[in-house]
Amino acid sequence: MAPTSRALGLILFTLVVCQVATARPLSADPTPRERVQQAFKEITTLSDNLRIATLKITIFNAAQQGFVIAQGFTGIITKIAEYTAHIPDPSSNPSPFEDADAKLVVESLTTFVQVHQALLNVVIGKHGLLTLAPFFEPIRISLVSLEAVVDTFAFKLIAMIPTQKPAADDQFGKLSVTVSKAIDTYKTPFSSGATLSADPTPRERVQQAFKEITTLSDNLRIATLKINIFNAGQQGFVIAQGFTGIITKIAEYTAHIPDPSSNPSPFDDADAKLVVESLTTFVQVHQALLNVVIGKHGLLTLAPFFEPIRIALVSLEAVVDTFAFKLIAMIPTQKPAADNQFGKLSETVSKAIDTYKTPFNSGAILSADPSPRERVQQAFKEITTLSDNLRMATLKINIFNAGQQGFVIAQGFTGIITKIAEYTAHIPDPSSNPSPFDDADAKLVVESLTTFVQVHQALLNVVIGKHGLLTLVPFFEPIRISLVSLEAVVDTFAYKLIAMIPTQKPAATKQFDSLGVTVQLAINTYETPFIQLSSSK
Image (cartoon, rainbow, N blue to C red):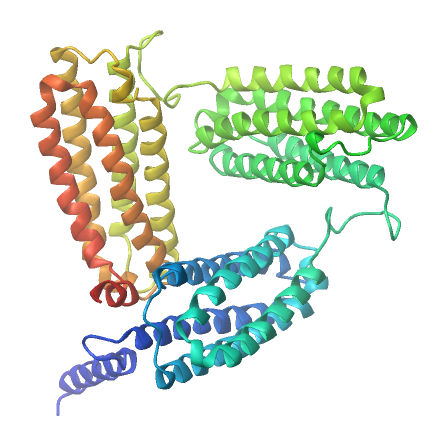
């Protein structure tokens, strides 16, 4: 046999072996029990993969691995939540599994519990290293979310296997103990850098909270100062991420402050004064950060993360308002001083928001006072550009880079969906009887819509064509979920936009229908086996 023939034969043999190895040992029309077992198999695999990744954490890679762990737990939680949604609610009196099937389900549950406990024990053991990583807090939050989602999963699954309820209860009980142990290990009311007494007072905890968000703000100020024309694209991400971290912290601390309606015991005046001192320091540092961000506005309009920064500023305003309301109620004797500080902060936040206020991004080549039609056209221009950029990125996928590109695609679709949702929010609701565009403007809008549809269909067709490669990457499922989300957000966008262009409704409907067909084809192509199985019954 010639070398070429032998090589070809080896390739064909490898493909056959891979197909056999990856084939699901399920019937063409799997039973509910088989679907549950497949679900357990998938989340068990996710747990074991994450355990292996966690074992590889060292002092040198803790910061990077922290992200992998937080992301891994999020994937497991998402899967469990998805499978839970497919289990009938006990209140609907579903037909339970017979005992033979129930025993098989408990076997799969037992394997999952053992593997997931092994993962959790590794995560617990790596606690010391992970406190050094910036993703320590997301890991803790993931553990709390895991506890909640497992409780719901257990409640619904046990109702389906009544004959094996004691055995299932035993397994879920074991898992719950380990999850609780992990949560306790990672439980820090305020992060691990706290230099508090063994039993800190409420005032000390508030001061520690201010210390931490003040540090976050100052670190972000330093990072923002380093922005220049050459690194604005990368730094934009750092700033958006930094503000998100500050907002998350403030929201978390706010949740620990009793609601004023519950008539909590306020701080005495001595403690209240110390709290205001910490508040004053935070306000000064955070104002310094905001002023730097305002000063870098020109450079940041060049970065793709300009819009997330603007959204973060709006979110910051909202979360600070709630924080102020609850904190001031705890320090009534120092209310005027606290009001003064929050007032100063609010002014600077508002100034930052005004600086970054652009109905649609700053790249718009619009008149000084753009018309609604111009803004809609600019919106289409931006999502069309996002779609075309993602199409080009997807075209570059090959067998060697599919793992990295899968993330780029999932992230790219998320960006497009977010943009469409944001633009949709700016379109008046049809029920409010808004003034529609005249026919001339409506035609221009349809022209922009048509271009977007053509470009976005081209993107979707490339994504469909790359399906084979993308099934090999861990971001296959996020891509599928993104496509489903895209379908939903486009439907809402179409409904509201068409109401604004009644004279061109047939032309617009035709374009949205054409896009809908391609989106549906993409969804069908990426329909995962478990989703297909569960929908086939």
